[in-house]
Length: 156
Image (tube, rainbow, N blue to C red; front, side):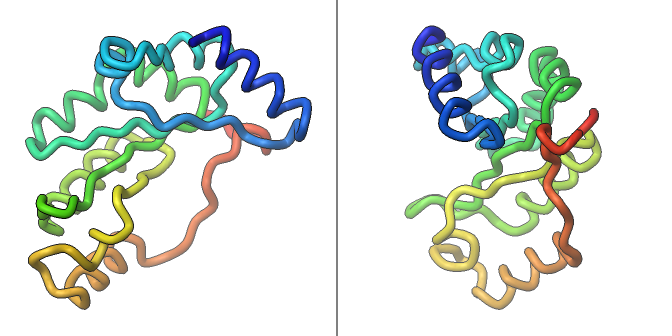
């Protein structure tokens, strides 16, 4: 898979050198064990320029521990690293309080940002009223900001 990732990276850069190559894997141990996706190696080889780790956990302590792994910290020192947070599934409701707590943990550790999964559960497919959810997200993100860009001179 690493050789394939090399070919993908090279092809993308050949087509557009300003394109940022980003991957959104699970935490390293799970990614490698179940999908043979060695994003830690890819990041070290310079094949990944932006990383969004899918940390879909309900338990705040488990969620937080995933942010503290050495490979996550190492990647953060080289490239923008964001954290994927689950906002719900068709039969799994995630309360806004949990989302708030997880976003705060990400912010406390100075990650590049967050990504939410999945769109329909942001304010639909939840036990909370859509207006309550929309207000919750507006409170989390009251102002806009630029996303860190490795190609535009981002530094950790």
